[in-house]
Amino acid sequence: MRLFSNDLGVDLGTSNILIYADKKGIVVREPSVVAVDKNTGRILQVGTEAKNMLGRTPGNVVAMHPLKDGVISDHVMTVRMLQVLLKRAAPKGLFNPKPRVVICVPSGVTEVQERTVINAAIEAGARRVYLIEEPLAAAMGANLDIRGPRGHMVVDIGGGTTDIAVLSLNGVAVSSSIKVAGDSFDDAIIRYMRRWHGVIIGKVTAEDIKIKIGCVDERAEETTMTVRGRDAKSGMPRELTLTSTEIYEVLRRPARQIAEEVLSVLEDTSPELVSDIAENGITLTGGGSQLGGMCALIEKRTGIPCAMGDDPDSCVVYGCGKSLNWINHMKEGPVNYAKKRAMRS
Image (cartoon, rainbow, N blue to C red; front, side):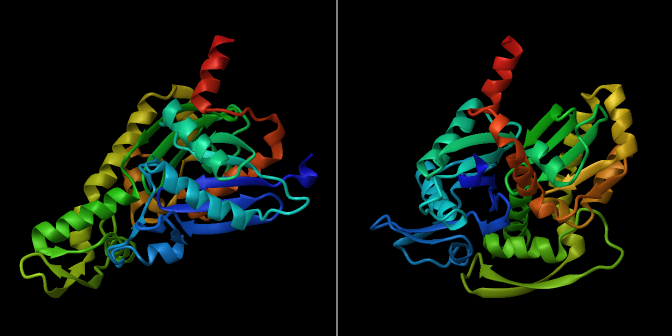
């Protein structure tokens, strides 16, 4: 049956969308941004080209993120963005039917939000849609052996949400999802620049600052960066130099929220699984995990060794790709509904 079936694994992230095609690997890696003409409703650009338009569009064009905090905030724009990207990943042909799609969702989403994801994928051209929890996909993508009874902990720091889960026997034992992640760091930098320097910057500049000099644990050597923005009072261009020390002061609060939530999940975990985690360590995945000092911060707070998975940006989509091997045995529909049904039976 899989010979003539286009099976795709989709990491539908707040910041980026990655698509894994069966037997091909990652075929799409684009920012989850869409640019649309407000007058005609026509999609102008999707992905990198649309991201380059953020903050630079004329009045009749809007560039936007149709996903927020790990869930769909603009259904119509999400559908139209997925239509473009799914066609790019699985072009239609005589022997290419509509694809079956596995999509990851944060562990804290509601059944209504899950159904929104399913409906969006169906409207975008998917034949069937299956959901998988993000930390489970991240663990598989990071090559953790979660088939046995021994516990593993994964902390997936994405753009909109941070998903924390303890995994065992191919399932999630304890999990939590908080809306503190990469976007929270960007917003904190924007607020700091306006309040303390009187300079207004955009999301793209804030992300650049975070990547180049951002850290959540004190650095041995201080680094600097020149930033350009708009003066809040005069409206004129202004240039200033930022240091990694002051950005550390800005980012450490949201980073500590993540560390505290990791500790909270450990407190809700059984002693046997905590013992396994202490031995196996904590695995970090997602783009936010690459922020300087994140591993060291969580290790200090929990006392448990912490390490980043290989290619943390792609761990979730690689996990979705691995799940395609047993797509014929997966159940359609929301994950939350499937859990309730299993508990009733």
